[in-house]
Image (tube, rainbow, N blue to C red):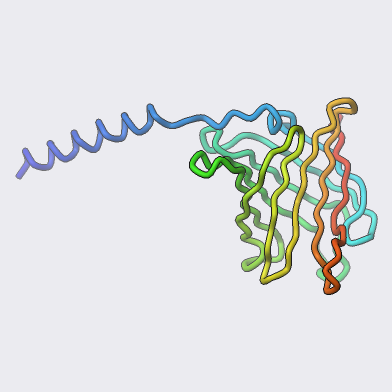
Length: 171
């Protein structure tokens, strides 16, 4: 019995070491520009908004974690908006992935969506309970700022911007 357990342990250790050697670190020159602390200003649901964004690579450089917090209280909820966004890359499908969680709790808050990169922009297409939407992150190297925009289709099928923020590096 001990020989079987030792043999199994040996196979598991060798297999784990081989797997660990094959892990690819997610390298992305565009998302590297987002690492750090940012001040977001603009509008959310047509109301002025000031936000703080902090981004860092986590989980063996597999995901960029972005923490987003508003300075203002959301009137209908009586809380500040806060979200955690995790952006990674699916090597199999060759697409970006976005996992988000926020103060609204389970349901829409746990959205997992795919995105495509086009130059200095990553666009994530979303579908929540049949409502189409998208989120865009656009790096503007000339001003060293980011544009963060989300939109949803309204009942008439027209795109309506819900978030329109410019992110500047915090000093």
